[in-house]
Amino acid sequence: MRPSRLLTPFASALALLSGCTMIPTYHRPAAPIAATWPHGDGAIATGTVTGPLPDWQSFYRDPVMRHLITLALTGNRDLRVAQHQVEAASAQFDIENAALFPTLNGGALANVQKEYARIWSLSQTNGPFYMRQYAVGFGVSAYEVDLWGRIRSASQAAFDRYMADALNRENMQLSLIAAVASGMLTWVADNQAVLVTQQVRDSRQHTYDLVRQAAHTGTVTALDVAQAESALHDVETSLQIYTRQRAQALDQLTLLVGTPLDDATTRTLQNLTSLDAVTAFPDVPAGLPSDMIARRPDILSAEDVLRAANDDIGAARAEFFPKIQITAANGTASNNITRLFQSGMGAWNVAPQITLPLFDAGRLTAQLRVAKARKKEEIARYEKTVQTAFREVADALAGRDTYLKQRRAQDALIAANDRQYHLAIARFRAGYDPYLTTLVAQRDLYTARLVGITTQLQTMENSVTLYKTLGGGWVGTTPPRPTASAVGHIL
Image (cartoon, rainbow, N blue to C red):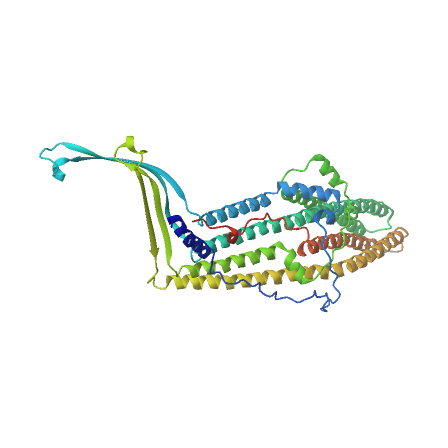
């Protein structure tokens, strides 16, 4: 029987053994959350609507907002950092996976050594002679046969960590999209507050002029004039505050986008003088908490980190077993370079080595304990991620139930304060009431309008938050990679 036929069964068995690992069977931890979403009053929702979430282009329907988000997806620097981290994790997986394969090196050797014949008792003379050695070949150095799956476990752990980093990048993208949407809404709200404040300033300027004229006729007192002047300066101060906030909101939006906004986009933003001008968001189905676990990339990322910790246990277990390393070389050798490639100059060597741990003062046992403790740590971290996500969705659902009612109540308050102000100014002009009554009504109306802007902003931002916390906008775009266990082992 030929030697190659003898080696074939052994090689096949070795390859089969090399595919084994000591990674514990993975089980996803039970989610420590309720089966349904709570309502704001503490009751548990029983009729939760299920359904797919729209993609981000369908949810963020405002054209200006979509344009800003598109710019941010290509220009935001934090997203670029996350992408480069994914590339580094992918390369680390390639490094770990490469250890499954032997490294083949080629080389050439030329060794010339001068000796004296008397040293070796070859002659009675002291004349020198030269020892020459030449070799050309290729070989494998210290290749570890992964019988117990130590290298494969490390490769699988590197793959799972790559997936975790890729999912973190996806989660950052979802957060960036939501941040750009909220940043634009904040700018529009500040712009609306500036315009409202300018209107109030013009109104108070007119009232101040009216009170000063009335003071000349003696129908109002100097106190009324001072109150009107104080109210005018107060709103002028507020105008500068909201102007500054609007400029800072634009700076923040520009930072998120990652590039200066062009003139056309800036003009379009400036034309948005009210949050009502922003295209409304569609309602999104909440689904069930179990849907959230499959939708949110941050939860999936935490689970991949847990999988990697589970893989590390397999690598730690394999350290207790013997390691087999093979060093081999094949080529030609001669003491005369002219005969190096002639027939009969072939040379080879094989040097297998087996290392068995006998005593290490408990180091390997401690490494296994560390790996198991890290897994428990990642289980707790995964469960906390799920609980945090549940709380975020529950808060957003509570906001959806209450912000609309709050807006309706605030709109009614603005309408009532507007009637009160017009009645107060009419009575002041008719001489029935002092100016203080008008001033109080004017301030109440102004405050109610600002609170109305804030409430509308919070309502729209809550829709953005609900969509994000449910995992909306992510459709599983993480680039697929072969798992470490799917990669063959070469002997």
